[in-house]
Length: 187
Image (cartoon, rainbow, N blue to C red; front, side, top):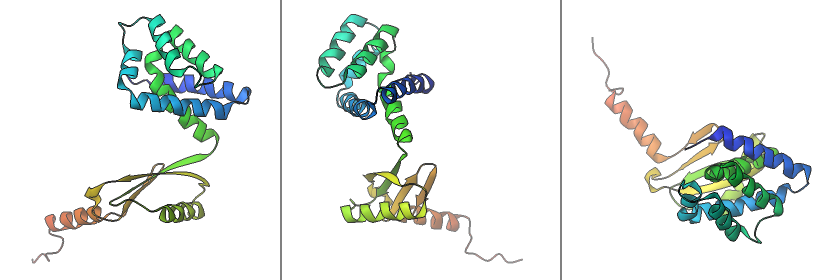
């Protein structure tokens, strides 16, 4: 059950509280920890979403997992979610908090997909080039490797997609041949 509006509202409330109490970085680190827990443990997410498990047991499990690893604000926030019956939305809320934190700090996430792994020097050059040619100054570069690209790269800058892959070029050429673009039509 995806509910981005609900997750966004809870995330905004938590971000506002963190800014008010000057603990934004702490909350962000707590959310990164919880995101890692959710990604690494499917059982944890299943427990949170299970209607069979009581709220008390969910609270005890969540407290056991996060004891000493998250701030008091995050622990209280988690208890509030369970009290309100919204614990199933916790993974979405975590994602929304991270996105709103990045928006608050003007951090842009750029995704680079290549056919082979990229060196650190090339990563730095790409970040520098993006900073020079756009308004994006704080850039977080995420890299991925996909063999199907054959060569080249695919760069995602927010809503902009730059596809400079060999696979894209080959597909364009294939489409031109299928449309007979290279055959002169005789009257």
